Structures are given as structure tokens and as C-alpha cells.
Image (cartoon, rainbow, N blue to C red; front, side):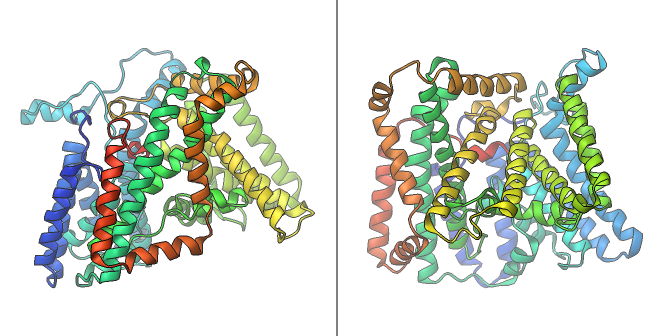
Amino acid sequence: MIETLSQPFTFLNASFWVFMLIVLAGLAASEKRVRIRNAYLFMASLFFYWKTSGAFVAILLFSTLSDWWIGRRMDCSEGRRRKYWLAASLVINLSVLLYFKYAYFIADALQPLLGSHWSQPHAALGQWANAHLGTTFRIDQILLPVGISFYTFQTMSYAIDVYRKEVEPVRSVMDFGFFVSFFPQLVAGPIVRAKSFIPQLHQPYRLSRFEFGTGLFWILNGLIKKVWLADYLAVNVVDRVFANPGSYSGFENLIGLYAYSLQVYADFSGYTDMAIGIALLMGFHLPVNFKSPYKARNVGEFWKRWHISLSSWLKDYLYIPMGGNRGTSWFTLISGFFLLSFVLLMAPNTGVRLIVLSGLSLALAAIYAFPSVRKRLSTNVNLMMTMLIGGLWHGASWNFVLWGGLNGLGLIAYKGWRKISPWGSYTRWWHQAVGVLITFHFITMTRIWFRSGSHVSWSSLDTPHDIWTEWFTANAMIEQLLFGFWSSPFSAIASGYAPILGLMAAGMAIHCLPERIKINYRMAFANAPYWAQLGITFATILLAYSGMSSGVQPFIYFQF
């Protein structure tokens, strides 16, 4: 339903910054007129999304209007009617997400299961529009609207918070539309909560000199991460190795895997940094989404530092309602039933179904046979279900399900280890260093499946995932890591990859700097004279784009 994204409208395009200057000029003109400002920024955000996703702006508007209206109706209702309105919001949001994101996944799994051979899903909405409105949308594929997972979770959390009476429903549809579609974070997060963002809608526009400097710093910081680290690693090693792991030695596969671990962090956190900086220039504060995640001492701490807005969303709206650390609840059983049904239905073969059913049967038997460990097992079930759903959130691929499951196992294993560990509270520095190394290597190994399930180019965002290619890519890399490690001499490979290894080492060194040092150089830039800030900005942009080894690479999380 949209044209190819060969010329994407992102933070890295000159056309975006022309758009941004126009937005700031209009913002300054409506400085003290809050309602006009919000309506203006809502229109600007819709324009941004239209430039990014074309006609899919209609889906964004549909989600916005439906949840705004349901929130108003929920506020006027009590008891069961209130629950019905919440259910309506969840059904609408999840139905839209399932259709656009999981249609191919479900169809591919159902056809062999039912012994049928129908054609692939097609864009029914586009077909209807072509027939009745004279449009010319593509209907041979269901294309994924950019950022749909992010704004769907955002509107769902709003409906749940209104139901819980934790936030007041937004009266103005323009204000609510602005909350949902705010363009810096619309397509790749962070996922914003109504309780923290909506109060900012009613404050006049203010931008202090310090906030200007801080916003500019975050933009440059994100640009450096994206262009100097993420894109360089993508073009020079990651994309090549993952395109055909069998053509490279095990050592080269290992370099590609660790390079991807740095790439995905620099790419995603780089986008978030730029989003935070752009929002700050407009007077709005977005939540921090990363806190040096590769300094985490265990898997639990990693998920408190990585993609924080998603991790906290899953905790508050899934894990805790399931029972959290307290045990299971009715929500656990309902969620478990749907998740189990989905997994069994989508399983690629009978063997996988038997493994899933056997594991579930053993868990249930242990819960009821050993009351003393029932609470602990129930907590682990809640944790695993949350991580599996988190994996599915990333995409319709068994690789993402497996990646989520491995992270769930990592969290459960750490909880078990913490109870028997002879190291106590990890007070000694070498205890913490060992924890950081183990955690980083574990997280990196799980990315074999994450990267194999991801798109790698702007053109591939317009095509559905090939789940078997993804699966075979991961298997080929594992085979090379296990059995092809000695196929080429280390010294020759290390020499050929010296610039890449040097960049990776420099990136990790900066990442591992103490937080106080990072705060100090951020403060120094924010408090520097305007001429110094503008000079550094010009030099950074010039160096970034002159040293670009290829065209603009897509932000990895645009596909989610």
C-alpha cells in the first residue's frame, strides 16, 4: 500500500532537517498558545508519518480516534461496561497489529497444518480502496506500517491506564493525536506513557540555553553512533557475514556476530538519542531508553538497561498482571492459553509441538506435585511468557520466539544462580567483571537468531519475512562457529579485519566509560558558548557524511 522506501524520510536526511526548521519556526510562532501548538505539532507529525509510510497514516489515525473515543466512553462507565470498553480497545489494537504484522506467519503455518494450498494473504484494504476510491495501491502484499508495534503499545497502555484510573482521559482529540503521533519517537520509540507525557502538553513552550545545548548534544551523539559505528560495521562486516555465513570461517562469523551486537546498540540507541534531542528542542522530555546495557552484571540488569521503555511496558502490563513474583493469576492462565495455542498452531512441525507440550506438562506437574516450589515455578512461568511475547513483539518469526525464550531462560537461570551463588552480593570488582563478561557474551550469542530474523535493507522492508531462510541462516552460523573455526588462520583474518576490530574496541571502551565522565562531557557541551556548539556541530556533520562508506542504512528498529 506504499511505495518503496528507497528514499526514506529519517533523521539522517537533509529534507528532514528542512522540515525540522519549519516545525521549530511554527513552534516559536505559537509559543504561548498551547492548544494551537499541540494541533500544529499533531499535523506536523502526521505529515512526517505520511512521508515515512504513505497511506498507512490512515491506520495511525484509526488507532488514534478509536482509543481517544474509547477512553472518553470508559470514563463515563463503571463496572462491567468499563471492562467492555477496555476489551474493545485491546481487541481493536491487537487485531490491527495481528493483521499487518503476523498475517504471513499465520498463513504459512496454517497451510501445511490444514493441508490446504491457498494463495498468500493480500492487502484487502488496498483492494477495497482501489475498487471504490480509484486508488492504485499495491495489493499483492501486506506491507508492514513503520512503527506500528510502538504506537500500538502506546495506545494500549493509555487505555489500560484510563481503566485503572491512573490517568484522566484526554478531552481534546488533537492533544491525544499529538500524544500518539509525536514524530521524534513515533516510528522507533521510546514507547511513551500517558502519565508522563500528557502533562507536558499543557505547558507553554520553553527552551533554556542549557536545554538547547543538551538537545543538540543528544542529536550529535546519536548521529555519531549511527554513522560512525553502526553503519560502518553493517556495511563492512555484519551484512556480508549474515548474508552467507557458510562462506566465512568460524572466526569471521564470530567477528560478524560481535560486530552486530555493537551495531544494534549503536543503531537503536543512536535513534533514541536523536529522538530525545529533537524532542528537547521542542520543549518535550522523552524517557531514557538505554543505560549502558553492556555494562550489566546479569541478564536481569541488562533488561533494566536495554530498551527500557519496552521492558518496563512488558513488566507493568504483562508480567505484574500475570502475578509477577507472587505466583499465577487468571490473567496468566488466559495469556498462557492464547500463547500456547499460538505457538502450537504456528509450530513448523510435530516435533516442536511435542517439545512445547512436554515442557508445559513437566512444568504443570512440578507446580502441583511440589507445593513448596509452586510460587517459584509460577514466577518463572510468568517470566518466560513475558519474554516469549516480547520476542513475538519484534516480529513474526520463529527466530524471534527462540530469541525471547533464550532471554527468558537467561533470566530464570540467573534467579536460580543468585540463590546458590557463593559470591553473595558481588561486592568485589572481579565478581562484577566476570558477571559483565558472561552477560555480554550470552546476550551476543542470542543475537544469532535476532539478526537472522531481521530485515537488512530499505527495500526488504517492503517484503514479508522468509522464515525458513532466517532459520537456515542462524543454523549455518552456528555450524560455522562450532565446526569451521579453524578453517582459516587467525593472524590472517585479524590482519584483514584490523580496522573493524579497532573500531569495535574503541566503541566498547567509550561505552564502558564511567557514567560521571559521560555526564561531564555532556554538561561541558551544553554549557559551551554558542559559537563552540555550532562549530562542533558543523565539524561532526561534515566528518560523519564525508566518511560515509555507503548510502544511508535503515534504522534497525524501523521494521518493528
